[in-house]
Amino acid sequence: MGFDYFDLGGEENEAEYIKKFKELYSGEMFAPEGFAVFCGSNDEDIKHIWRGGKKGLRKFNKGRAARIGWIKEIINKSEARKVKKNPYNGHIYFVSQKISKGTYYVVRCRYIKSKNTLRVYTAHLVTHYQAKEYEKWEDFFSK
Picture (cartoon, rainbow, N blue to C red):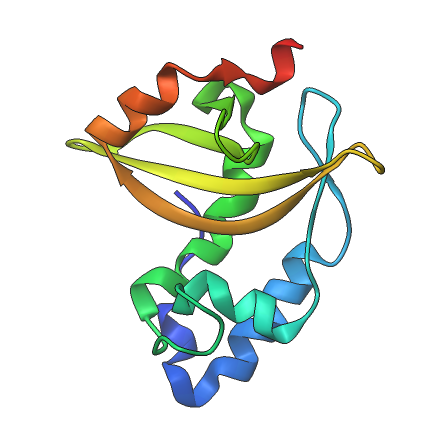
């Protein structure tokens, strides 16, 4: 799933990762369900995808940087994911089908009610057990 960004190198080429991210995500994407989805353009917000944790506190991680490509793929392929609403914080989770034994991709967004859009917040892997918990949540697009 996604694209291979390992050839961009590591932290010494982080500007190239940011550039590639902006190329892919500078405009709105539209989920097949009709919702506009966008990513932040602030460099620190973008770095969060491959650094994780609180902004600027974690080190560059090539494995996490590979997530750049699969964000769009999960949002665009409705047949390959479910979209759930976290009942505790209202975040929206695009949960992929299983990618390997017990592992799933997730793109987490915030719903911006005033604009009726979703903003990508982060992307990460989850276990089978986490995905089962997400199954219990309300479907976001069924409202």
